[in-house]
Image 1 (cartoon, rainbow, N blue to C red):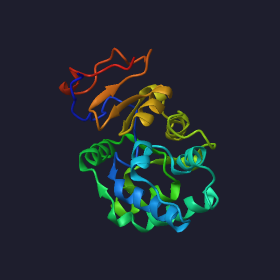
Image 2 (cartoon, rainbow, N blue to C red):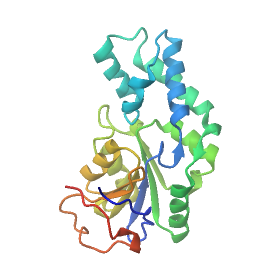
Image 3 (cartoon, helix red, strand yellow):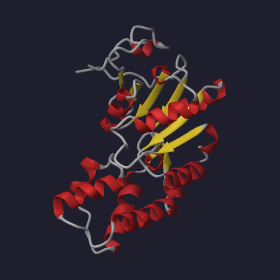
Image 4 (tube, one colour):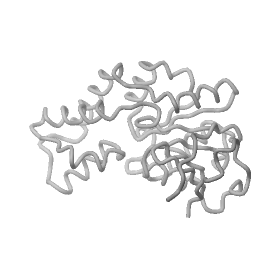
Length: 227
């Protein structure tokens, strides 16, 4: 079993990129309740046992999977998702900041490092959450599912590559903080290093030019390299 490492401070990286839901904020209940309510408005019950294994997928993509499994929804996906996003925005004050990760971002901001957010959520919902939590001043760039072509959200690398591009950072010198395997996969596909805040494992892409370089701090003696 791979040993859990401490959250990396990221000092040796050119830029730090953070996922939003589940990484910087605890939004599990907010996101589920919003989608369940939006689907309920259309007369459809969202089964939590079906939802939770897919929670890291962007909601519009999740409903495409729903229709593939259960048939057409009674309303257009765009209409359901539009209501869902409004419900998420309204509940933004209920979001709980995950302080262990937010402290990393605050310290990096004080050092003058470039910081970005790369999320499978929508731009409006992420910004509502940033403003409600007071984290908005920390980040130079926010890129979401709304900013990439349909079907190119995580686990595809497009979101993280666009963050790096807008930050003017080399993807190989970016550290991503994620809470889901689809996000870790996206980061590695983008040629970035990824730290999974749930498992405590640091993953590096194969062939990374910094794969043999020392990582700041003693906490990485037991770090794991991605296969």
